[in-house]
Length: 304
Image 1 (cartoon, rainbow, N blue to C red):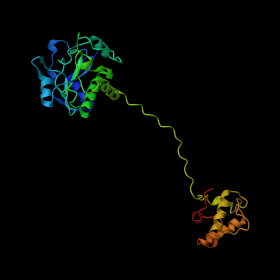
Image 2 (image 1 turned 90 degrees about the horizontal axis):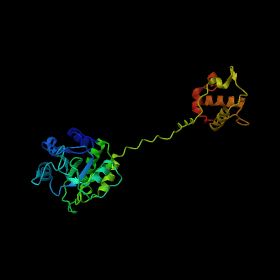
Image 3 (image 1 turned 90 degrees about the vertical axis):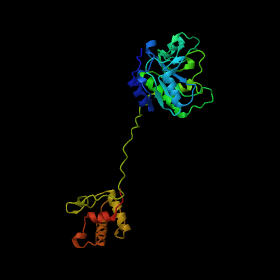
């Protein structure tokens, strides 16, 4: 059994749903509780006012009239989508309706039975929202108003943990009623259901391998020891670096090769590189083997 929401909880629920809410006069104590119990709450009922204009519609729903004292609902939804709270507690909006419908709403049944009886007090069990509309089938329902109806109903359902099946129209409750006229409750419940649906769980992105670092365009300087065997050139050592080095030495006009170059370090490689170092401005022992980092970087040996 659902205990009706307090005035503060109704106000918070509506505003949390993104609605603009106006508290009309003494709405928190405006009720018909002296005429019968208020609760347990079973659902939300939507009506149209059969009036035009916001101010007089709100006053009418707050005060009622000679044949039916107010409040005539809990909230009035105007054409701009603003909710005007006019009552809290028992309100004269639902009247007598069908007990089978009440049971279906309480059970959140997938479909409603035909409302062919008026034997159950609906004012006790339903929150009511009156929506400003003449109900003649010609008075338009602005998008802002329809969205506010969706949000207001969803707010009450969310606060109680109900689904969209706890929302009905007056025409689905009491024989002979036609409100709300101009949209279907089935479509409204669809919108409310989508609003109440939980956000889908975020999908985990597929695992991706870290990108393979791109090889540098040029072979990094391997260090002087790479080229030496003790203090002498490492003649006979094999490496694809020597082939790439030799090809670059030929390209810059310093190649001393009769055959090659190849992967095995030979005297032609030493002579060719010393020629390159002299071309770079080095003389004497500074131009001798092994390669230095400055001349190596300048030669730009392709990466192997």
